Length: 428
Image (cartoon, rainbow, N blue to C red; front, side, top):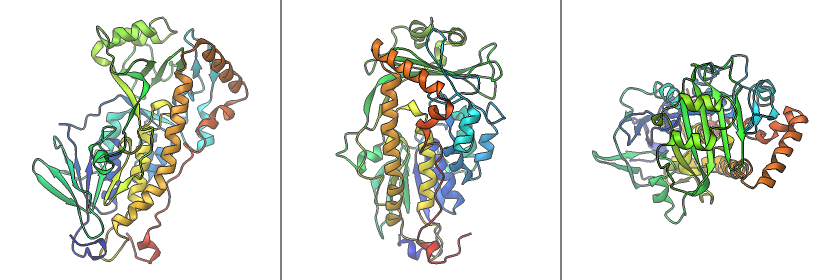
């Protein structure tokens, strides 16, 4: 395979390993730019593992690049710009509470939308996956196809990806294969990989009688070493999540719904109603891990890592999926739109991707770890001090409380600045 400067008569090929949110966003963005894309997903379907995802203004602006932003904004539970949010940034009737139900902080989503230039949208992951997949040609996604990196490639040499059906050559490989990324291990075998964050999470999405976007005060409740969040979805269902400090690898002795009842059953309304509506099979439980030691780079050769494969973070800022979407769009903007004679080589362009993404994702990961230490605090004295500080900040107004998302939710996608534009090449 020739280098990109001599690709006349051939459409450049990108292989995406992983059909989650980040991988499908990258596939859609590259397809939009004229690449031939193959997505390899080891699962038998695109049904995501997980429940809901909150998309902040930064991710929605990234989705604008592929024409999906407004479609997703239309799924907000509040159509006046308000919506539930992570880490206590909730609607006008929401905020942060303690287990008794007392409000520590109330915050306006109108203020958040004004500060960050748009709403926050909470939706089921399956909905986002469906909308992203619809932007790809039939046959792009190959299900039940495990993939391994055979050769990372380089200038003048393609990357190669192995499957049970044979090898694929690629001008670009996008590794979106998650927190246990095999590609990351192949590229950086000496990296220690993810570490346990110290807590586990439970999630449910289900209809709860009496709870809708008009009746539910979207909230996150902070206890001692435990948190709970309840938020409405536009389709009438309720998304609830919980977290607790536990040893790694634990499971409930009976079932996870019963475990939630033991840990949260005496907390304020509507938590008992959510638990009453849940069945054991509705509850997902996962230990939380993050990448504490940043990777040396987010690429090697013709291979780019994105999302959890590159920078897994605790969910305490609600930015894991958002950063994967940012990664995907910035990656597509970093590599050339391949046309005969156009663009810098992929292997060189990926250095720009690392330069753009590594500092930002490292900083956000570290901030998410700090927030996790705060809201998963177990010591009663420390918890009392934390709660008092939150109450004081809330009294100062929502703008002060929202500062924790400055530099995150106000992000905007960069302009495409690679060599083909600088050389005056016309790119449709």
